[in-house]
Length: 108
Image 1 (cartoon, rainbow, N blue to C red):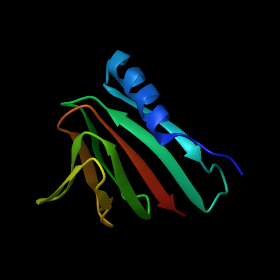
Image 2: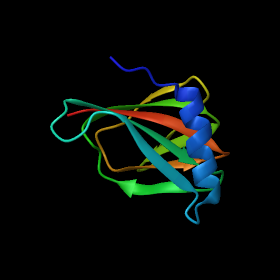
Image 3: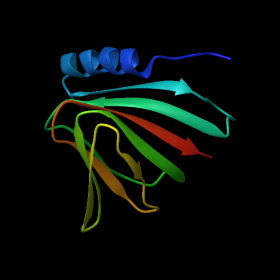
Image 4: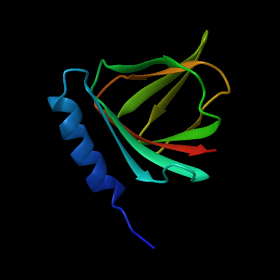
């Protein structure tokens, strides 16, 4: 068994995102090729986004820091620290309204 501090990892990845031209960073916390479950910590600086992309399958976002908006078509779901957002089975984008870190969980 391994233990990860999501708080420390969020701090680390936010620092990486702040130094990156695209304002984002990602690190897989658990899972890999062939794994049934994957957790990825994503960090976005305020005003940056993950452009619209296909749904990865059944997935959720846990907002660890900041405020984000999950957008699919004409629908939008806000999320702030502590919120769990269920990712719709549709093309979607993620916008950071302020420096934010989220934990993406995908069941394959």
